[in-house]
Structures are given as structure tokens and as C-alpha cells.
Picture 1 (tube, one colour):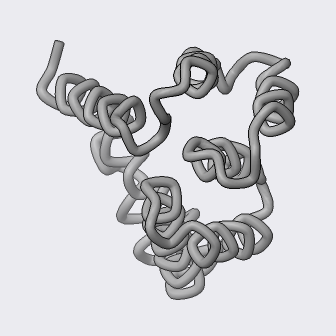
Picture 2 (picture 1 turned 180 degrees about the vertical axis):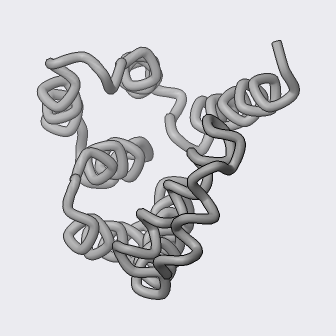
Length: 150
């Protein structure tokens, strides 16, 4: 296992540790069960959204886990603009919670990605991608040809 993979696993464990900390549940057994069900959910399963909605339906509006479940639903949105809007709403509504802070971070990352994409544009991104592929797969053979074009 390489260093990158170990670091990735370490970050996932830190996120899990933060998620199961006292900030997302009360001493109530049902609250702890909801958290355990949420942690075990697999976002790649077909019933993931259904399970998130089911969890939201079982909790009160002031439940400590609500921000994380809403964040999980927002992460599934493919439209970048809509996702950015929903993340902003989560940031405003849950500013003092771990889910709100994570939504703020993800919102910032989306803004950076939108800015970067606007700077290089679609063609620039494609040429950058081809330059990397050329270096990795063709030992830079095609890279000089693309420099002549651009």
C-alpha cells in the first residue's frame, strides 16, 4: 500500500471519528441507532437516497444528525450551480455544526473549480489533459504537435 492510499484511509477514519463523536447524537438510544444506520449507508447502493429520506422522516427538525444527512443528499446533486446553492443554504442554516462547516468547505471547493474552469476553458482543459496523456503514454511524442497548434 502506498503513502497516498494510507493518507486517504487516514482522512476517511478522521472523518468517521468526527461523525460518530458526540456532536451528532444525544444520549438517547434511538439517536445513536440513527447515527449507526447513517454511518453504515453505502452511497453507491440504489436505495441510498431512499434510506436518507427515511432517516430524515424519523427525526425531529432539531436532530443533531440532520445537517449531515442533508449534506449527504446535496452531495448527490450533479448540477454544479444547484449544488453550490444548496451547500450555501446548508452553511447558513447549520453554521455551527460539523455538517455546516463541511458544506462551507465543499462550497468553497466548488467556487474554486468554477473559477479554474472559467480560466482555462474547455479547450484549455482538453489540451492540458492531452498533454498529460501524451507525456505518460507516448513519451511526449504528440505534445510538440499540440504546441504548434496552440
